[in-house]
Length: 190
Picture 1 (cartoon, helix red, strand yellow):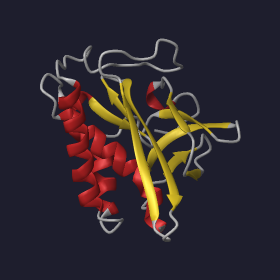
Picture 2 (tube, one colour):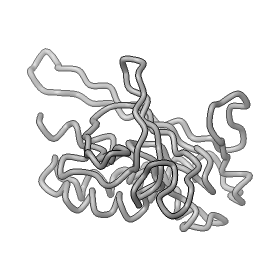
Picture 3 (cartoon, helix red, strand yellow):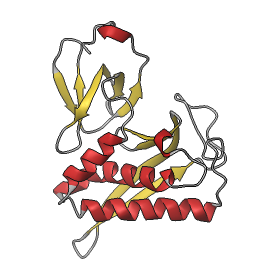
Picture 4 (spheres, helix red, strand yellow):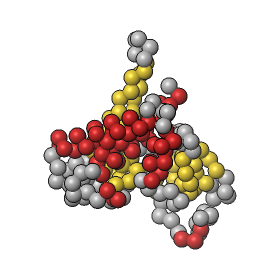
């Protein structure tokens, strides 16, 4: 149960790895934005939502839902949007689903109910967008905090460095990458 908080990162890595194998897509352009958005060429191409519920028999069920912009994406979004088609992928919906399911299965197998989250974290960071860059975290209570995205802790929480150097951990929120100024301007220490 304690490892369930890792699942958004596991799902993002699985979606990223699966879609990065699609023909026509440069795998280096497929990145992850904390906690579980998949970007293609810098635009959001995949959104992931997880829901969990305790079943009558006491077991915990988790559903991972993925929305993939295959040929179309939202036109009114507060961030850049991408589609697989615009990135050069000419695959059928079945091919996209198979790639997504295959990547997800592989990531879940590696994760192994939380036993190997350190490996998931390491691989997630290898494809992360924005590490060391200015960002803003919009929190569930409506407030927002800006700083530098520094890392993920051992549980997958975002480590944000505030302008004064204080480090804060976040386990929930929407991350927005901000245009940064070089050489530590804007009050951030690089």
